[in-house]
Amino acid sequence: MTDRSWRISVFDLKARQACRLPPATLGFLFVPAGEATVSAGGAEERIGAEAGTFLNAGDMVTAGEGAWLFQVSEGDEVHRSEALTPVLSRRAPPVAGPAIVRVDRIDQPAGMQTPSHHHRGPGIRRLLTGRLLAEVGDHTDLITSGQAWFESGQEPVVGTNLNAATNTFIRMMILPAELEGGKSSFVATTPADAARPRGVTPHVFGERRI
Image 1 (tube, rainbow, N blue to C red):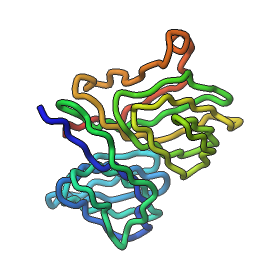
Image 2 (tube, one colour):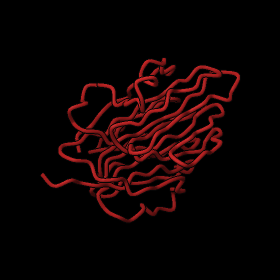
Image 3 (spheres, one colour):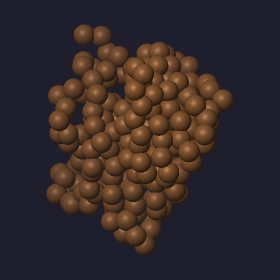
Image 4 (spheres, rainbow, N blue to C red):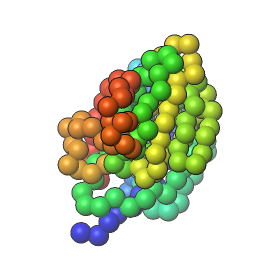
């Protein structure tokens, strides 16, 4: 089977503006505060604060206080809309065989540092609350609330919570379909890293085949 690759992105959906998901795109809407409305096939769904839902091509979304829109698309172009502000967009490395998109929320306790690791596919993360030192391959970045970062799934990663309370981030990853059902995508860099506690708690919003 030919390897497939996608563009993975996260946007700010502007308050009280409508956006329609483009063709050949799978989306996920996360609502940090307030409420959002999804219109699909003549029906409407309301999404409350700190909740989210998957979106299909053609769905229309609006949010009273704005929202985060994650997308996985087959084309090379970044989605352009008056209602959207791009936050981060990357062409993801190819994934071999059948694949899924998983979206989850990760909680990391104060002061906790993850063991060096990678995941079995590329993804975008966006910090909801806290301060995080993200060491991704050769890059070290201080991430604060609202900022996003990309992991290809091919480089070692260490994340350190610099906050006095729990860090929380939202994560969208493209993973092998064999991990469907919430199976872990975590791969420790060394046996010593594998023996260390991971120190994070995932809460899976859902998965979709692509």
